[in-house]
Image (cartoon, rainbow, N blue to C red; front, side):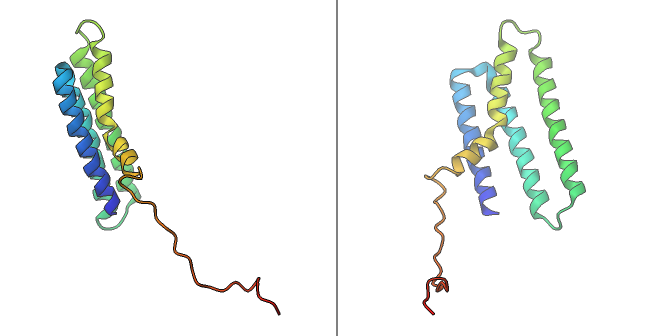
Length: 136
């Protein structure tokens, strides 16, 4: 379970870096990157609570999945309503930065599984004797 928390921390670091880069170079889209990251990190923290606290319940899991998709739909609708009247490709770029934020946990998973962070697990060789190679 420790790796789930490490993935959350890596996702948070990615979200902070994404927000800083967006704020420095694309100030108009900083809000969408932050909202996407916050939604993804919040959903991941709820999933950690559901899977670790007490007894695992299918009903709680299904409710959380529905809640997760409702949050994403609300976020998509909010971006649409706020950017529909803006000129040019503002809506498209807003959705791109929102998706970069939503993928914070996915990038955290990919970064965690790189050899720089997660060391490969070496299998222990057993000192058992094989009976197939023994002579009768």
